[in-house]
Amino acid sequence: MIRMSAELIAPCGMNCALCSRYQDWVRNQWTLTPCRGCRNDNKKCWALKRYCRHLREGDCSYCFECGEFPCERLQRLDRRFRKQYHLSVIDTLLRIRDVGVERFLEAQREQWRCPQCGGVLCVQTGTCTVCGGAGRTGPR
Image (cartoon, rainbow, N blue to C red; front, side, top):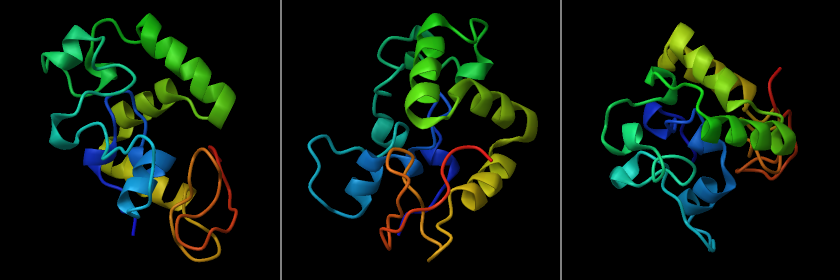
């Protein structure tokens, strides 16, 4: 079962629990590029950490803590996520900054909960990790 937690919120604001690569890893299904989440095992964030000195050196935990926020790389990621998934990592980071990660997660659990079975929807496909049913996707 997919569980949302603070450890699954990437430095860029992506909730790894919503990602198909992470969901495939949890369900022990074959995936070309398995992912345990950007924070697990001090893994380098696929999108930013390998390029960002501040994240790499541990100067900040989330991009909004950086004096360069939002940097050009984060803005490019945000444009891609807005286009592909109707999700803004910059808006997500601002929300986490404003309400804290726990309140953010409470809202995420409701927003991405399958209306059919209560499982977690996938941001890429909009389907449930448990029953395979379609549900609401994107910000409400």
